Length: 199
Image 1 (cartoon, rainbow, N blue to C red):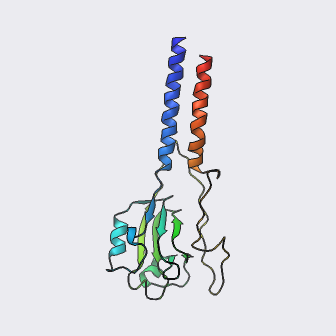
Image 2 (image 1 turned 45 degrees about the vertical axis):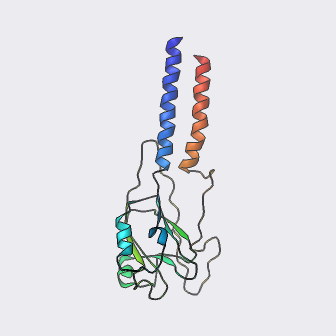
C-alpha cells in the first residue's frame, strides 16, 4: 500500500512538472514594441531602428507592435529592394491603423517601412532577422496565421480584413497552446486525485 502511494506521488510530481513546462513554453513567445516606448515615429537619428533591432531577439511566433497614431504613420512589410529604395509600391502587407500587431510567421529577414511620403527616407524603417521558433518537448506548434495582403490601390478593405486590425484569439481557439496548458492543469490534478483513490 505504501509503495502505491509513493507511485501516486511520483506520478503527480511528473504531471505537475509537465504542466509547468507547457506553461513555460507558451511564455517563450515575445511581444516587441518597435522602438520601445517612443513607438513607430520618424527617428531623431538614422540608426535608431537598427540599434533597437540589434538589441532584440526575434523568433517565429513573436509579435511586433507598431505603436503609431492612425493617419500620421503606417507600417508596411516590403521586400529588401523596396526597403533599400524606400519604395512603397507593391508592399507585402500594409497596416494603416495604429497600434498594429504583426505576428512573425516565418524565419529570415523581414523589412518594414512607413508608407507616408518621405518618412522612410527620413529613417522610419526597420529590418529584423527572425530565428526559428523556440520549442520544448511539451509544446506543439500552433497554426500560422494568414498574412494580411495589401489592398489594391484605390480599394477599401472591409473592417474584418483591414490591415492594422488585430484579432486576439479566445482561450477556446483550437491549437492555442495557452488554452491547452490551462485545460491540462485541472486534468492533471483530477488524474492524480483519481489515482490516489485506487492506491
